[in-house]
Image (cartoon, rainbow, N blue to C red; front, side):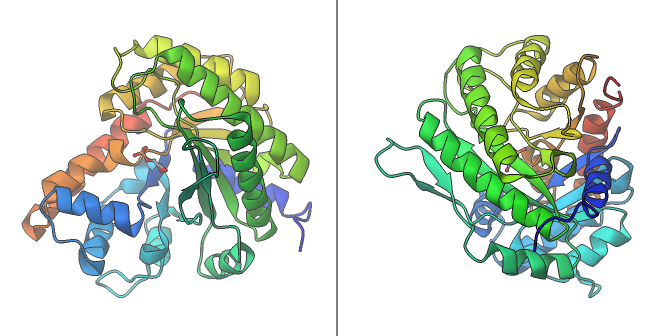
Length: 335
Ligand code: 13P
């Protein structure tokens, strides 16, 4: 199977819908391990049922689709049912959201590279994508992880290669790939180091995407903002936006329809301020929006605390953060 030219317009339409003005993507795809740790940190027992209940709380928030275009799920949630019997992908469609699925299987160190990571999950991926597509997935996500201290040309190329193979397979199955090369903002590095690492990661990804024949119109890029490390003095939002735009302009072809940023552990207000500043720049060919996880959901998880009596308040917190982020994405790209 190869991506036929007839499927590219359909992929492009979905990619545009995912990153359209005034809406973004909710990342609710934490692995079982990460989600369990986040539940436990809020004093909630972590098991299949509580992970499901929490994701049901998120997805059943009223009027989520006012500010959210799609929701990324992990494999466990994708196969679970809400308390009313619907599957999560069905409930997402009913709520006006495109369902997406995280398909990588996590990271492992690259041998001999002092800690640089490679993301795994390519074996059998075609079969898994066919199953996800049959169960309603509109898009997928694969996350490569880089640290400014350990990124090398080899680790950037290896991860770019994996992202390109994943993206090509997704398109073959009619699924829009979210291509996520994340440079972590943990640490005390400065803005210039983040810019250097992000440039290397993105340049490698787009080299590999080009070599693999992926249709750029039919993907969504999910990068980090270019910021100083969270342990270093913060930079103003206008500086972050300028640095991010400079890196993106030097690496991301104009054919990419939309860029949906991850929040990376930045507080909600900061992530939204970075996005608003970027959105205000007129010299960009791509739509910019958000695909935040923590910046949208952390308040809701804390408010819920595993108690059904707090569900409505938690959903209110989620809705408020989604609206805040959506307000930061109101401008169309330059034509
Ligand atoms: P954060 O916004 O919490 O960084 O998560 C986004 C995401 O999907 C990371 O893969």
